[in-house]
Amino acid sequence: MSDTKVDYRKMWSELGLNLEAHDALLGAVGSLYGATYLTQENRPEGMGYLDFVMTEVHGLRIKELDDFRKAGGKVVGTFCLYVPEEIIRAAGGWCVGLCAGAEFAYDEVERIMPRNTCSLIKSFVGFKLAKVCPYMEESDLIIGETTCDGKKKAYEIFGEMHNVYVMELPQMKRDKDLAMWRSEIVDLMHKVEDLTGKKVGVESLRASIKEVNDKRRALQRIAATRAADPAPISGKDALLATQVAFYDDVPRFTQSMNALADELEKRVADGVGVAPKGAPRILITGTPMALPNWKLHDIVEKAGGVVVGEEMCTGSRYYESLVKEDGSDLDAMIDDIAEKYLDINCACFTPNQGRLDDVVRMAKDLKADGVIDYSLQYCNAYQIESEHVERACRDAGVPVLSIDTDYSMEDVGQLSTRVEAFLEMVK
Ligand code: SF4
Ligand code: SF4
Picture 1 (cartoon, protein in one colour):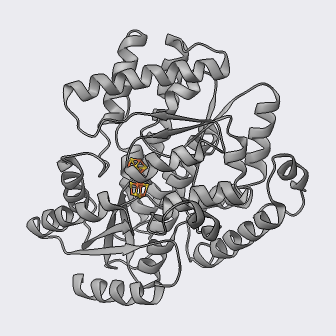
Picture 2 (cartoon, rainbow, N blue to C red):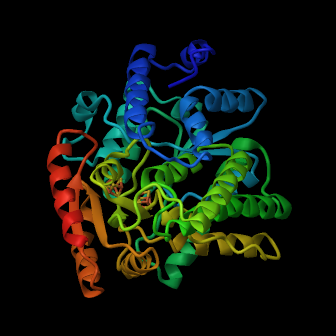
């Protein structure tokens, strides 16, 4: 999807990408983007920024990372919400979320790991094996975490191909788990300090906490406008904003998203929407939707519904809570970061009542007519937790549909039929 006016091939080649495979990936993502995004009507003008970012997803942004590294900067890749961006930035690094939202090189992947592995894991291993992800190749260090078993073991394989550091994440949220998690954050801080050669100080950490909070505040503003009927922005556009938040330049992204939020707030005041007033409103919960996974949102919105929220890591779990900004010294700030991050409600935790409460609360706040609980196939944690999600929604009187899928497009017809029937039922 890169700008044809600028030739980035030399840069990609120097990064070690397989140019032929990379062309195939970019071509596929570009066509998908056109069919999913550019066919929408009445989009907010502020989405022009995200269209531009997507056009340059492997171009200008990679050039920025490249220039940063050539000037001595270090880039840190992450896969999961639990890795605190604040720490990486405070040590002078740049953080990029590695996406893994498309099927690629599965044949090669399935030679080294079981077929029944979730799409997210297969995708990031496939991107590495096929050498198609410039964000991975620009990452001086990639941080993994012991969330689910699949990821844990995949990082062992991945670690043979890249510089990987794994954080241990507790699976419960007791005081002793918080203490352990805090010590993991301190270890991460030292690891990143060693990488960048810069110490995290009170001022740099305070500044990065504020900067990342500002990014989250901008996304909160966008999310709040989606409670309006008609919704001022489509679900897929809002999802894209969160997906891009993981790798774009932080101050520039924040500024652009605040401009988008201004526009959306005006739309709400003027009663302007992207779907007709009264269109079925859907909250989606479940496994994260990494770029370019727009499949379910597209199905819902092409069937006449509008997605008004995402209770997921590419949604509210990313931006809903902030790190406290009044920590007086480094220790207090690290406490605040540990608390904020351990408060994320991933299905890897037990028990995970917080997520169920969030789903019900968001469904009410956003006036959702129904909830779709989305799990990636072979993701035991989310698939098993689905039973609790269904029960919590039923108890709250909110209709719910559970869907298991993967990144392939083979089941789009079947899913569309189920979603259409659900939308019909909730209205
Ligand atoms: S679903 Fe869990 S493991 Fe996956 S990105 Fe979110 S927090 Fe991390
Ligand atoms: S989707 Fe599930 S199985 Fe896949 S990486 Fe995330 S938690 Fe693990």
